[in-house]
Length: 178
Length: 333
Image 1: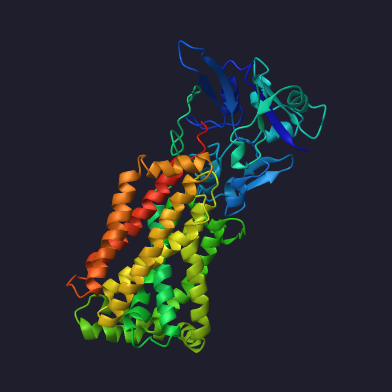
Image 2: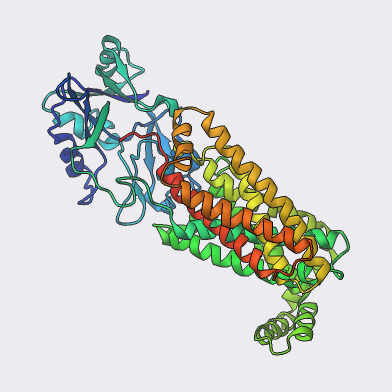
């Protein structure tokens, strides 16, 4: 089993519903977020100017620098490749925050390190993650890469895609369709 | 040209707009770790060479410093944790891949010889200090420690044990000190997300810098002419090695992939250029090296002057590396 997410940059309208859904579903403290939206503009006016949106979050990498540098083992990988933090093993040193090329982690006001969990509590019940479930344009696609019939496998098979900072060597599992 | 910005309102403390999670306490902690490692290396090395009585300042008196500054560094480290009450998790786990775990355990183990060493020589240290400065305020405290150490059988037993096995203990302490000194750099170099840190040269560089600050401090504290000259010469060698390593660091980065090239440019024209080349390279390394060369050629230069510049240069170097390292990134919004 290998959970992954695909994000269709051609469909995203940047509404921010995924951000709010995540904050509500996971009780993310006010002022923080586990996912966020980036607006990317290419070109210079009056020449061709292109714009697209990206919904970003933890990439649940295959090669996890955050788990490697954690001194206590609080950062760990669960079944399906989901990267999680156990709050009462976390000392809040920030080694994982510093080691993440995607700045996907933050210090929870209670002191431990918090991040996207791929809504593992929902996924365990066979549901989509909160952000995927609410996306009004179906720009977000979630599923199991080991299952060739899962929505994410089909999306990756039929589209061109890229990942963020592949040169960092983390083998990220958040794919952007273009 | 691509321009990227957050449109969902993201401004998380210490993370946005750029990472500044680690600051002063970490820099000071790395500095103190390197300094303590250097003092322990010199003290134990001189003991093994049979020069403990010839150079009492280095081999005996200076060993009062490491347990104090290591403890202070550990207090800073725990203070800098965000989930402070769970710090004991560090000592319930050992993770071979995590430099921070290595550091926590090294610091724990090194505290044992670091505390035992001055206790072994407590009488000598008290004699040395009272001979030179009977009004020294430290003496009261040292006498009290000596009295307490002698009062408890268990402490006496451990000091006796340490005396019996002082030679093997010295070898182990030198190895642990080398690990401690090199760890201050490796801690940072393990983060591949921070291009400035992610280079194998950082471990040797921090070790050299730490040993150099230690040599400077011993040169400053020593009252023995031979000892002063020895550390002056040693420090010159260490400063040369450090300058070579720093140049090598930026050479390697300039020849590296784009993220490392961009990072090198932070120091070669970017925002950290003047503070690094003037503050660290100029005032922290080259200037004190010139002073020491003059001093070795019998010019009258007070030894605290180059020592002070080297020590503050070492601290400034760590501050800049900690801040600039977090500033360097893969530029993903």
